[in-house]
Image (cartoon, rainbow, N blue to C red; front, side, top):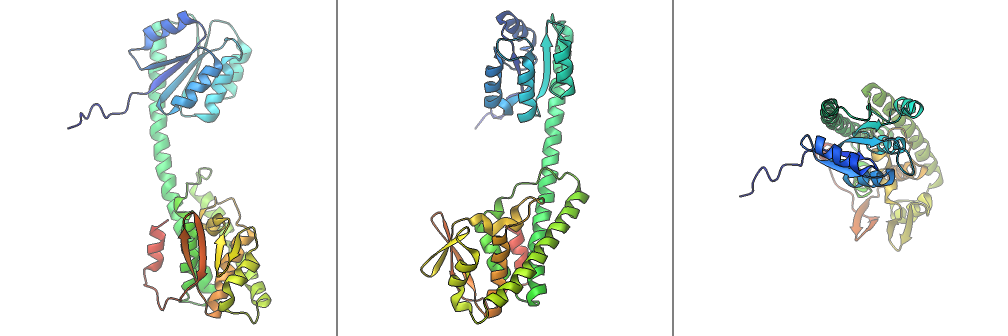
Length: 331
């Protein structure tokens, strides 16, 4: 039976960067009982340690004057790439200009003068570790919230596809939706990451509304153009028609199959961040499915190795009432 204590995550560590060996030893002796200490002797070494151990680091404390670059650069690097790490600047010199710059740019949480008061140093680092823990908890809660919002957004987009098809073709025409969603899954829409930039729910709804309206308008116009362009052609010509209207940027024809050279086109409306419009190829893809439904044709998706293909397939006689809900669960 495994020891539960042995499986626990190691405590968060402090990264201390200073080129003076004496200062490093002194720091380790003073702080080592408070938290694990990782040390580096230069800005470049500090950057490498950040990249290698960022997940386990809670606090970065850097000396200002070191050979090569100043500590400011390391703190800036940490702020941009690992904002969860609490950053502290320490120096024995009165470098007011660089310190003010570091504070104004949000590079540091505290400035500590050398020589250190050990009691005060321990208190500062204890508070920094607590702050890092609170940040971690906050970030986890924010991530969980955004994941929920993203799932709701994706479900709304799936519903919008169904609503658009019903409004343009009439109710009960689910075949284009079925084919579209099957392609979206193969195109990567089931691995959607949250849109981190939209923190406010009202902003998200407003932006989604505009995006869906633009997509619906473009789809309506493209379907009208295809009806005129493809007059007299039918479902039996589906592969040739799609190769023609989608173009080489998205697909290539191989006999009676259509190979998607850029499968990401299949998932754009469902997976792109709210601020990004879908491509002309994606609008044309859904418009083509609506045109195909009107001609009585249907497509079937398959994956062969790494390739995504579609061929002419049989139309389904009917779809279960909860079919849209089943699809939503897959995203």
